[in-house]
Image (tube, rainbow, N blue to C red):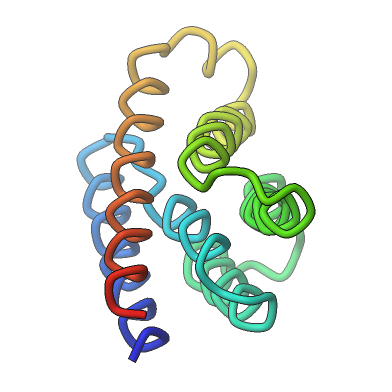
Length: 141
């Protein structure tokens, strides 16, 4: 049940992210969903969701910087949760801000530094969606 719910949440994140991109609003909900999944799932399921996200969002055969961000930061949050046992809220907030910042920096440093409003909107929306996903998965587990 939880796995099916997570697939539905990830598909919702894809639809919202593609819809927002069509209107030039930077929302990285798929990355936020991966952050929430790294707090609730074990590593085989997390690797499946990371591979699915990379396949849907960037289907090209070469590794790019956004793909590495989508691969590295959820695994980093999973490792922090396993090794340090840090509070989920604090870890989620820190990794969302750093992950969205790193994803914004892939567009270029001058572009990322000139659009602070877009970064703050993206970070706040991603943190909200990650919390929503985390609470929905925690409620149905």
